[in-house]
Image (cartoon, rainbow, N blue to C red; front, side, top):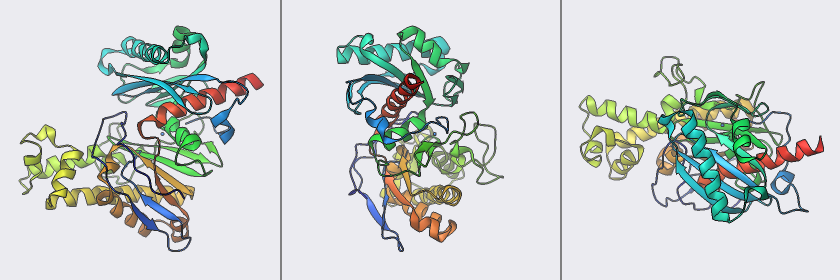
Amino acid sequence: MREPIRHTPCQTREQVVDYGDLPLFVHKSRRSGLLSVSVYNIIMSIDASHSCSREGANLRKDRDDLILGIDLGGTKILAAVVDSRGRMVSSHENVTPATKGREAVIQCIVDSARGALEQARIAVSRISTVGIGAAGISNPEAGILFTSPNLPGLREVLLGDIVQEKLGKKTFIINDANAAALGEFYYGAARDARNFIYITISTGIGGGIVIDGKIYTGAIGIAGEVGHMTIDYNGPICNCGNRGCWETLASGTALSREAKLRISKGVKTSILECAEGKMENVTPQVIHSAAERGDKLAKELIAQTGYYVGVGLAGLINIFNPELIVIGGGLSNIGDMLLEPAFKTAEKRAYKEAFQAVRFASAELGGNSGVMGAAAFALQEMKRLERG
């Protein structure tokens, strides 16, 4: 496995979290001797029949193809011009007008794309194809975005066709976390893996599942919604309408909710002081700051969140038996305080042999994994269409 690396904190679609440059620790598997890296960056599908072989990272060696990758999230829209070897030529970011309706979001997508083209000083005619990694449930084969939790105006939208008409280039869509998984598969932490799971833990929890070198999406493209597997059937109500989903217990939102609940019950803590006395300022970053100062409640809540992270990881390890789990997203910037209890819990709850076979690695591409993966997916699909 690669030597532990340091990243700048990544930006996720839900929020931007910066906990600074935190150290990594190395957890050694007893049996295999493989290094399982506890990470400070923690980070959802393509039709299962579509191969994601690493030829996709350099799909056309005879031409210098340029692809437009777009990462569409509830907070930001990032567009980038990427070449066929995975080098980012330019990028442009806008704030997502999530509350302003469908047309405003689509126009912002187009504006972001044109901004990236202008920075690269190239015309859209130079672009081979466009790939969009979109937050929410989508069907890549049909180019439909069914629903997006943070973009209420985008429901059952033929997003691929709409953007294709506006930019004049063949456009493909994929779930944003699956795009991020592809980015790590082609260019990042999962370059040496064929069976791995990509997890993002931030405001919510998402994931991408790669089996035998292919992203698995299930019957209609919804597979990989790991944040919505039930961990506690009596747990908190999730935004999806279910109760006790993984992300209601192990996400940044869950951590903040529990802290506010304890504060409102009068538990002695310095968390509110760190939040300048304002309950709305009680964020994972603030809770982590209090924990670093020795606050008992803050440390307890982070450990509890880590426990639930581990419960979910154990389930994934037992079901999929991955060789690698790549973790990205803002909440893991907390580091060992969160991840040590997560890995200990996963080790206790997973099959011994399955846990000893898995490695854990930080996402290498940070906030660019989604846009890079969307570009790689688009070029891969374009090549598949050309082959007929």
